[in-house]
Length: 231
Image (cartoon, rainbow, N blue to C red):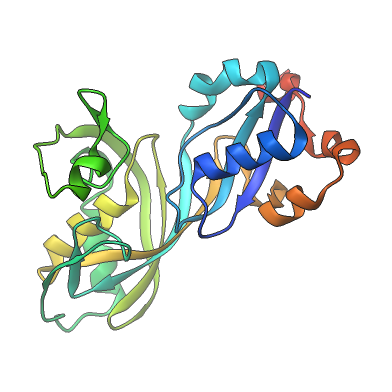
């Protein structure tokens, strides 16, 4: 069994949980993924099976598209709804056009500081483990690129958006930074990955459905290696 499995991840399991479940359920020794999704995030998670795991670096470098929702007026230590509340602010009078004017400021190259609650490692230790101990360290900014960032619905204090970005972009950080620009703070409340490189959510199979698939039927869901490399 070699190729890619396009999973529509549900909210709850970590990306590692999904990998482990597929490995255990179908008895596949080599299973990896291309780009972590936070536990509360949903959408396209590309799993690589067998020899296709060697393509991980190539596919992880692909651009991504997300949709999501944010809440203005509150900040958290994780920059999303899973974290502890760290501050509140009065939401100014805004319309969706105002939010899109703020969003335009983030188009192009950005030096983005990753959230403390992340899988990035410092001396071999994931930052989220340090954060759980109340330890905060300086994080080096990372160059990312925002191709498009636009809000499509606003009802105070929540707003829905869509963003196209380069690999390594933390949407949580993007929303946190936008909240600072608005002046009242903000955090991410929903996130869904729609596109990763050439693959779209429309081609993915719901996680629960994959787990219910008999081993003999899994091969029909796997994208073969030639297609992954554009042959």
